[in-house]
Length: 366
Image (cartoon, rainbow, N blue to C red; front, top):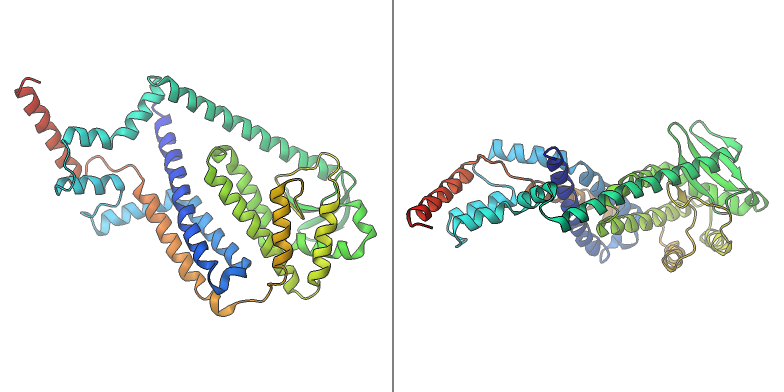
């Protein structure tokens, strides 16, 4: 059980960072919504990808941030716990040292009690979450196998150096996915009867491939078993799906080979069709999503966004600054929630005060 404690610490830190990073990104997104970048979905998607990459790398980046802070400013605390200890030693927190130390060690103590079985309710909750991880992992594997069966049962129609274009009678919605070595665009066979729809769909799916959207979709699905219970994960995924589609739509229209009207008609045409067969809904990037109120709202947003396709060169100059600010903020947030070192000077002073309080209590006969 002792070996599980660092794993639980890492999971807790990752979820806290996930929450803090989403809050920072939401504030920046709200500011962008009131700027010339409000309709520049390509730029918003790039910024979101930077944020997500920093979040994924935050355990490593926070370690280097703490190490750099200790090297450059050895007496400056960076974690929340060390900041609290420094404030206590300055007299800004007026509670007994024994109570303060117990408060600081609450998280570690709760984890120990869960692992030892002293808190049956929390232990049961931990077991439920562990079971959920196994179930979600199984669902992800099942969906991947379903996608593989669709590809295996399809007909290879065209081939590029990196991508296979396939036709299938078992799907009614085009989608793009990938295997270990090759990427695939799977089309319903019926699309061959409509040349305009075929042109729009191929342009759309190949744009997804150029943007790397398939790889990002797979990354989200691989993270689902670990973060399925965290509502922030769903908010991240929903935001990414929205910006991914709007960015792709705008990029296709900006190429000037397809008119917004033809593109919108193709979207509406596929949304009117019933999904037939066991269509794989995850582990791929589909042309449209259907069957829910959220999907209908997303379609409406996509159609309305088709008129905003011009590049905003002046406004985009602020994006590197925004990305840097967000990246630094997330790394500092990740560093602040790390477990502090046990032998810092402030910690030793606190430990001395605690021991003195214990000796005083013994001398008084408590």
